[in-house]
Image (cartoon, rainbow, N blue to C red; front, side, top):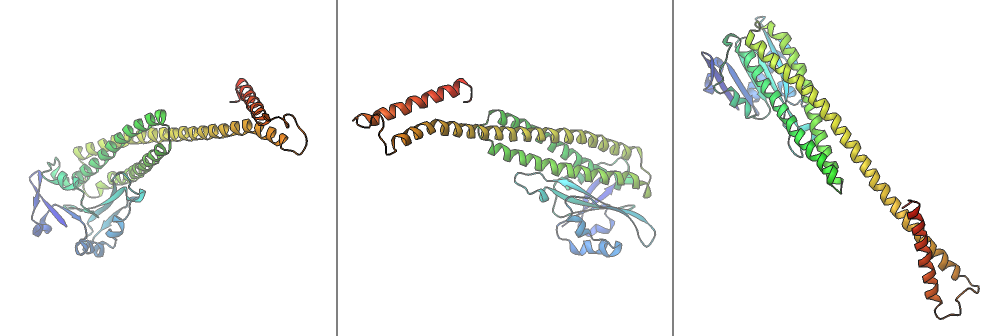
Length: 316
């Protein structure tokens, strides 16, 4: 599918697809092989392969037959959702930045892109490609930051569950899910930071960066620094919670083994007594009709004494 946008004065507006050659911004999503292959043949790179990357970014400068420089930049957009596999938590967004045109590629439609492009007001019309790209990337960093805030709430809930929950198995599953999300966000953040460095360095190969564009870049870097600190702090706290859960599981296991040992020690006394009266020799109470009850009473008394002594010595 294709969506095209034309620049009218300082505003982007949706334009007919038939006007694709004269459009300022083109958003391509889904299986548009014919349109994608025209660029693959012209610039000798595989956009389809880049779109399949979900753990790293791609970036490069290109020169066409007229010695015009353009940029290829891809970055990762987080798609955090419950139960998602780690390989499917991010999707790649590819940009082709030309002198007067910006083309965006995604494997599937990302709703925020057309919503952001529709009626976007631009401050630097001469360099609208950079401004549009950076605003989309700025939105991406804000989404990651909001995801991190959501992780904070889940970490607080997990901390409360650890303190009050009897069974740790569901809690441990929640912890693994949070760690998986943090890995996805950390990978996305690190990759996008490299793409941002490349953009800042190479935008001057097309046009000079103006004040507005530089301001957006600075805001993205500030958001990036904030995310870096948050990701580090959350990751360390999740490691702490993991160690706490492991310690509690070990403690519960030790308590179970201790209880079983206590029971085996107490039950050993009746077994010894029953064994003593079971040998083929004359023993006390053998002739008595109440001998069985006497042996049982002796076993119970000695077992209780053993239990009392173990409790007194704080072994139990």
